[in-house]
Image (cartoon, rainbow, N blue to C red; front, top):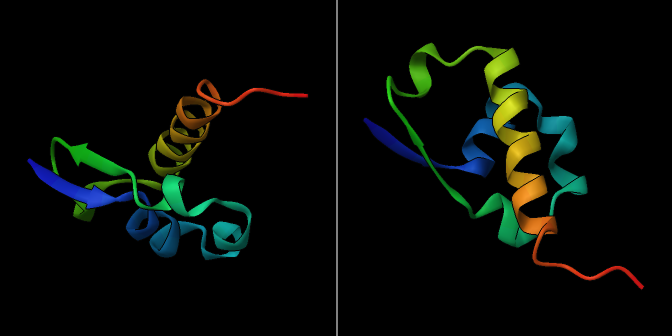
Length: 62
């Protein structure tokens, strides 16, 4: 098990997305069963998408 911040995942696979994510999203703690070393790009994108959705569920749209 390894715990990383979402920003670590973004920086490794999709650094171009960094400006589009909010600070609270980037600071999210993500627990990876097998560590960041074997995480693949598809899995990283899925984690990023899920994290964005989680943070949006607490927001209200006007």
